[in-house]
Image (tube, rainbow, N blue to C red; front, side, top):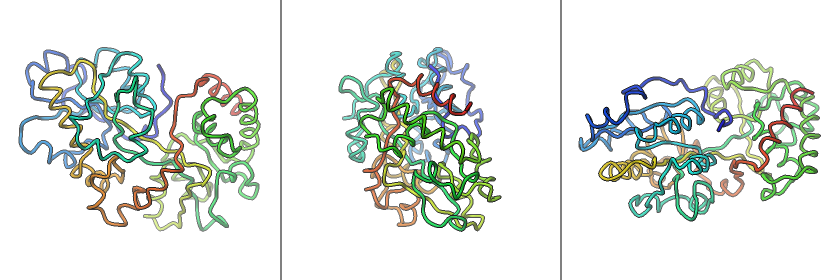
Length: 359
């Protein structure tokens, strides 16, 4: 299964601890107390995990990944027998469960899971047959970022389809899923239809995206390139990730971040346990999961990320500024979230997107 490019592909992937090939059964037998977490580099900083490891009962090997599909491929190739915890996207858990790679998580053994925000308790994603296979772990939004000094007003999704005044200075990400979601939001297609659109609805989306293309400076792939385009003034408004907003503000630029009322694209990653983890290793892994949803880790993540946990465990200890950076100062924003799902006709979505780009 090929996954779309993940928003964090720009993160540098480095080797940590033992190489993946050395994490087989023999390697684990030699260090049975060592848990192996396959995750993103930015989530497993030593300082974040120091409190969990302080008593010395377990150690932790971090196996860093660069993309969701890399993680999935490693597990399918046999890595599930060598790893205790993984970090799949909330919308990707179904691929792992369909391949029999995960085990259901006993939430009674993860007390901090009771502190999940309501939207994460009730989501149908990450679950199968009434059981949880991926616990929402941390989350954020993909907003509109813009040069407030070069635009007249805060934009909404319509700027990418009707913003003739800014023609040639707009940017969208080169990603079929998000591009089509945004067009659907602009067109007013109900959220409960968004991932089940029929031919007529997809035809309207294609028409809108064709019109949009004429207004764009570029489709971006690299967040570093987008940041530079903002800095030079070549792009004044883009569908973006959050980092350029803070990066450019730190450089002294007057940046704005818009969260359209029509809907904001939210993302969330989970923690999930491979099927072969049993016994004492499973108990230790569940303790790690509980720590990752708890206050010590959450406070470190909020300040160092800045990213928000999917629980409220750390919230009381954060300043108003810190809450603002991770969007927890006003949790009503979650009411506008549109979570990514896997469209029933995703091949048709990709084909449509490729037609738009080739036009």
